[in-house]
Length: 421
Image 1 (spheres, rainbow, N blue to C red):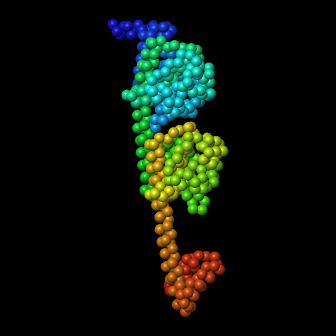
Image 2 (cartoon, rainbow, N blue to C red):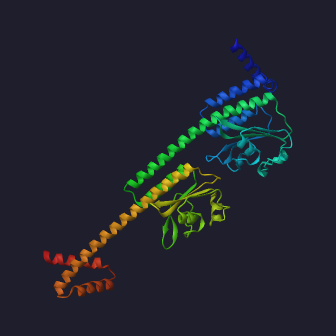
Image 3 (tube, rainbow, N blue to C red):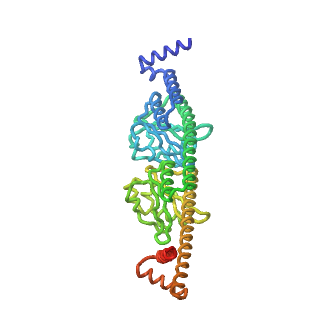
């Protein structure tokens, strides 16, 4: 009997969709069917949010809708999805907890219904990007799972609107189920992100343990880090005692950025990070007064920045910078992972420096041995003192513009050939 009733309802809906607008039961059935499809579809989070907003249109006659997510630190609400009117605003609009009606709903975890003149509510925050003076009514509902706030969904109406009890029940059902779906997708997204981070750290560790050249290791680090953090630019800057912080590796193709002048200690964000040996993140480098390259940032579309020091014990040797093209608040996890990468990069630099110094010392020792042998040959052949033999080598080196090692090698070769003959 039940199956026959469901079949009858589906037949009516398919042949007369307008019935859904009149019959609350049909609305609920349509919503449940949509929720089932949404829960069982293996799609990305953004597509799920889009499906939820499309489902909402079967319940409410709204003119625009927005979904905000609480960031990882629990301080800000970031716009993650909109109905088709304002897609360019996604990621651009950020509200503090308690700011505006949306922030109030998030803080109190309680819905708000404003039937008319929403802009007159003392909690209301106007965004010119949304042309909110056009809208009369406002409905805002928190997205909550097990008393944990995930975000807020807002509906705005051009005309005064009082939702019916049935409509509110359906909106509540939608937001409850959407919250569960979002919660699971966020857990999956977080697990996938951590897997990428572990893989990136593994690649960095393997490169450091390999026999690759330093430049190759640094290039791999910036490339992997950019992919791991979803940033459009990553750079490694190493401190030079004479010049300051100098770019030694970046994955960007921009010659203008690659040719960016060295940064003095304490100047710009990177210089401050190096001086204080403490990470700094900037929401928008194009507006931050501490940042010294605003024109370059605008040209390269650099917005948010995370800069961390490259540490060897308690000593900074450089910084790693990552930039995003959209406003982004870096979480503590992201900062910790980048700090780990920076410290591994510092070890790679230090180890290579030690290896280079060892090679130089070995070469110097080898040169000294050859010069001493050459001096002994000259002393015996010319019956001169050690100092005189040394000055003779030195004079010959200056006259023909060859190193003393090369002069010594020539003397040793001539001596060996004479013995052989």
